[in-house]
Image 1 (cartoon, rainbow, N blue to C red):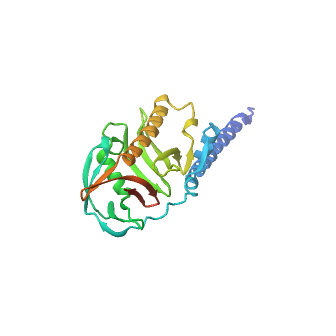
Image 2: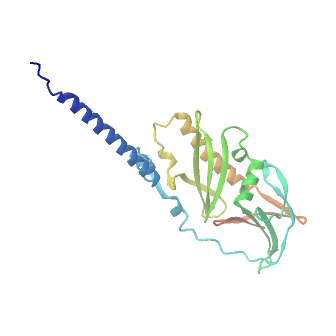
Image 3: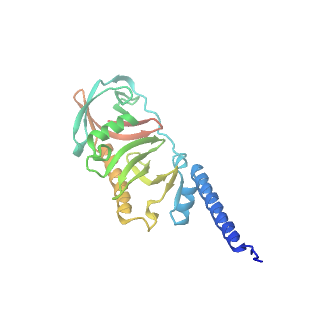
Length: 253
């Protein structure tokens, strides 16, 4: 008589494999859920030591806008010459949705010009004058400017060597309201200190991000500080700057 023995070991092996598979699926679904709700990225970055400056929206919450300049006898300038110093010059026409130029006097008798740019107008000007927006040097592409109260977030794809990395460069007006300073890097709505980028990032990627921060800050401030408007035989230079959610306004005298 032949006796069949119960093969318990194989059954336990199948149970073990099934448990591992179930745990793997649950872990995967948990990661997907955390990512979908914007939790995974901040969690991972905090674990590797990247310091959060705060929610990007909160960076701009406490901005006090400059008093609105009231121009008396304001006249729209149909066409002005914009001199951007080292970035060249060109003639711009008053164009709804891009930029508008108005000249008038204040209640103290000073003659001022306001130059107002929308996000699309700024992007077009940058596209024509800088490789950051135009992407002509192969280091940057797909630049987008998101104006915020008292600053802006400049989104751009950075060539990190073997891949392209999308970053948001968070910039805020300084106390004199004549320059924009880099506060950090936006990732999924959170601003992080670029000085604490994780050391395991490839050296090329780290350097590309650092270069992008520096170059964007230089270009943006060069375009602001070097700009000169010529209209009706008069020359105007910037004395104040104001930014809200939709418009960047230069006050020029």
